[in-house]
Length: 390
Image (cartoon, rainbow, N blue to C red):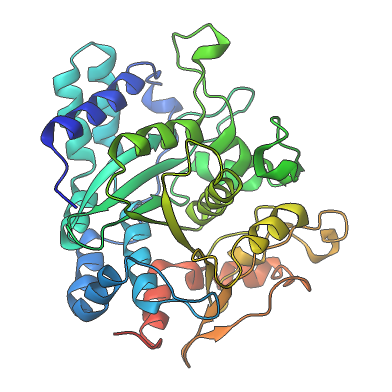
């Protein structure tokens, strides 16, 4: 795929800056601090350099798997690196970008945006990709909520002219706002009944991706923004050459990834989606997002022969994929259900997990605290090394 033109990249950055210009800049005392990223950029680049054959094989496969029966473990590593990179944006630079945008200095705002994502860009370059932001609602919450966040999503565009592909990646939990979003787990029916086939879904995840976000100076309902719609609009600007799309994310990012993948499947016959050559989903350490109607519809559309398959990668002992609900006694009242395609990573190698139901019970609270390390990206990588990869 030809390298994206500087003109197009600037257009996308300016589009982002215009969005930032509508955001409020809260006083520092009112701004919950971000948690330090779960890994250093040098760590992700070390993973790439230590597994050059796997990265090359993933590129050759366009990050696709040949069957739903077994993931392409080379593509899983590629997705793990993409998901890791999504945590590495610099919050202070983004605050300066908002300030500059609100002052009307778009050139300075773009410079801060570029500085904010330079670590993501360095990883994208090591993957022979270009990184493009698709949507950013991580610092604001949807209308009617308190201290929640929305999705931060980016696109890794392969620079290859043959076998082109793109990876849609979502950031996981890295702030107080994100944890508030995670905790608002009781299911709701989508406000737009066609979304997610009308299935009840995790309220926080739904609002973070399909909620209405009000820019600070907007009064009219038609000027509200929906993260999923912004994502698709930005993607349409850069998509070309029948590039193969895959979707990924870790933790909260895996939840957004699952809902987005389901929505692409649901809309695949819509005119605005028929031009996308979309393939697999690689969700890492994702919590449950839905009740059976959504899971059943997604599973139905990713059967053998469809060419698009879903894989949930679960590290052994990771507590996050066992929730929601929070307690096993709540499963009857809140029958959340994972989509299929789960594989467990262990020190002895990967193994296929049984699709739900029966559901895996949430871990006891005390055990959850002790096993949090099993949710970390580094632990996922260590057990990925035990897979059959190039």
